[in-house]
Length: 539
Ligand code: ADP
Image 1 (cartoon, protein in one colour):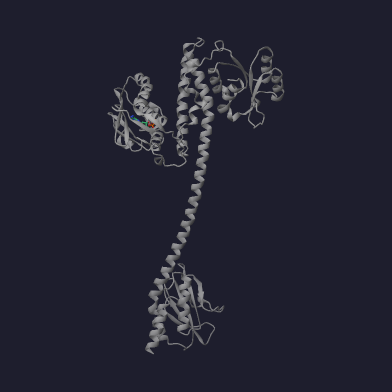
Image 2 (tube, helix red, strand yellow):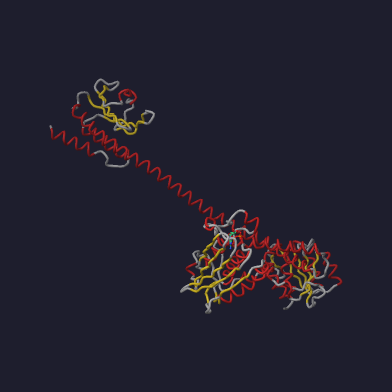
């Protein structure tokens, strides 16, 4: 008997906790209990926090069994007569999170022994049920985490997409803004020179203000464009051999007028030996120009110094000033976008807070870094560290293009960089080798090309509409006309035949694509019109 009891206890014990899946575990326990103790049937009900019972598993289906019939006894280990049956009784085994009900034939089992064995198993059963529930909660959390992770992934993708839209939008916007802005800058600069003395002193002053504001706006647009290009990984760096002493000598000369204007001395300490870098000259100039403009802007008296130092694998360019300085707490995030040392900076000195952020990003693109040291009221030192050889691996983003010549360099859009004294806009003075009539009521759209053509000594005249142009062409001789189909207020086809009759060459600008070789898409005006006009004129 003792051995039988021992075997029974062992089997029931062993059936507990073999799985971390609650249903699987309880199924094994219930069927073992029933089979080993000769029970007729059995159930496990879960008990929730509000003392409600839920049938979780049953050994054999039995519609007549209702756990609530025994509800008043479920707090304690009990043996009760089965409701509606003379011959059966119900053993109630309460646990922390539920209750086992086992149905036995009356007097068909050794209650003393089985009862005490079950009570001994209660602790192990509670622990196993807790473990299964814990795993269930973890699984649920994991699936929530999985869901969250996939949501995050989706959002990241959407963010990257929207970032692309933002960058495209910024690039397009800046382009759209720069074209008319260039016209404003060029026209105001010409007018401010007042060569024909048509303007009075006040008007010249106003023209200068317009010109300055235009230039400020252009700097801002270029900064925003740079930042968006950096974000989109679309900045290209053009590596070439650079004599760093020479590059900086030129730059210092360029900046001298600004420092003189502010009453500051600008000194330069080049390297004693010539050092050539493999790097991007345009970007190095952009960074140092920004550091120097800041040094000059934030220094009221004294010297701004540029010192070069050579190390084994890199060089350091130090821009040192004796200006207002930056407090330590502000120094920590001075390279973040739109951060200015203090709110009053914008009011007093202007600026956008983008220059240093761009410089930092560019320096790391070149495989280098920028460091800032400063003491309030004593001055600041900004150090640009550049590797002697910019390694392509330094460029973290693989979308960055490395090219030997950037097509951006020759964009006519950058017309503001032309030396205006070279440009002869005086119509009388133009040597009229070739004569071109432009028909376009959007004057600004054509302005940048006009400057380039005038530099080629081509005489240009403008008309707003085709009817006006026809009047001019009846009396005057022109080599060619450039007509904007969408801005000329009449049918181009008829005008085209008119030009053919008069043997005048014609280029038609149109928003839509057209196979005809005389047509050029309006989008391509800046890139192609200049060349096409020269080609038609046989230059
Ligand atoms: P911006 O000059 O257009 O405001 P920057 O990013 O170039 O933007 O500079 C951010 C801020 O860092 C400036 O507004 C200024 O407060 C501080 N700063 C930069 N250079 C100097 C300097 N040489 N001396 C003092 N403050 C400086």
